[in-house]
Length: 234
Length: 234
Image 1 (spheres, rainbow over the protein chains, first blue to last red):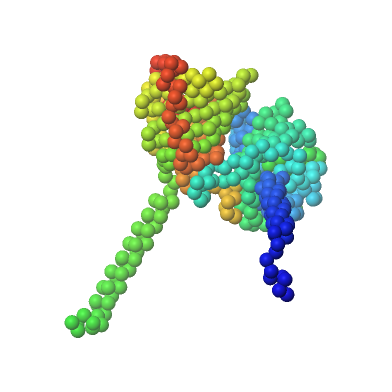
Image 2 (cartoon, rainbow over the protein chains, first blue to last red; image 1 turned 90 degrees about the horizontal axis):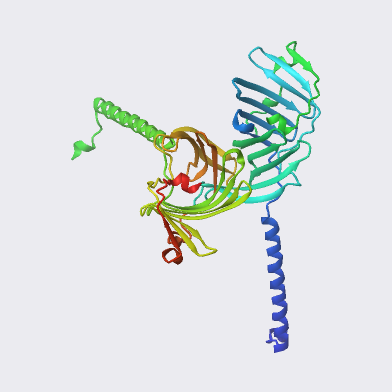
């Protein structure tokens, strides 16, 4: 046993130091690589249940719509209650989109009527598309003190289906949408600001059509209008 | 001494209970009032030392300028380094504004020259003007988890000097600017997004004109052009 406790000779010692150095260098390189991979902003997907508010600026700033929306990516359902002004007149839409059933309901409470439409669009979850390019990571406000700043990532890309270029700003932590800008050829800029976002759903019954949607007050239409998440929220 | 330790009679006891109740009610009312006052968003002033970045969208989105700025409200100095595109050509401005001395320097490093201008504007600190109206308090992102949201206040008002209506969004905590929109009559919307804000100054020498600004390379002008914080940052 004694030889184990003996001091190594110089040759052995240098060999050991060499091995230790190599292991150390390898560890440093590996951890640097791993941290670089971990720190690189990733094409994230928003939480499956979300609710929040949205202000949409339509091209030329002439129309502004405020929306309360509820989002369920598990059962592929969206409810949007939108109020705003278009030109001179008020706009009010209360729409429930059921993507799996490929129908949406326009719910009119004041006369308890309901318009049921069919549509063909696939559900697209709120996420950074995989082909989007990372543009910048910035802090809104300041990280100089707690609760004064928000770390966000901006991504740009183009959507062939919408014929649009987009810029998406989502939080680094939580993948919550903050601002989206879509520039659609021939239409202009659609600027959407998300706020008061809550992860989860306060009231899951918002996705159940009200009783009068299944009675004689229901008007069925089959316009087959393509509706995706983007046009649903507009 | 004994009478002090005696039990009070019923009359005394009810009188004491009455006084205690009144004091309790008063305390509750006062603290409710104080908390209401404390919770109401106030016309805040940004920290005296700030540095950060700024993206300015000029009307019709045709011009976009990125700025790095340094702000010292104590000695009333601003340094702005702006790069961008105006129409087809690149823009680069490196400007140091000394409001107390009523001069500003345009610093041109590539040929080590300097243009000194005089101006008349008073220093206006970054703040919510006292006559601005509170519009909304919202969360950018979400407060559902830490580091996912930012509480901000939006204020609106009009500036007689600039002939502009404005909308200012500042953080609730820290009074850090996030977004400002100025609609100037006849010019259009100027949208400024602030980011990567730091409370404090990394390098206070940015407010000292470089050596070549006091030598034969200095060109002095007296155009008397009014410059305030707003036009300085544009």
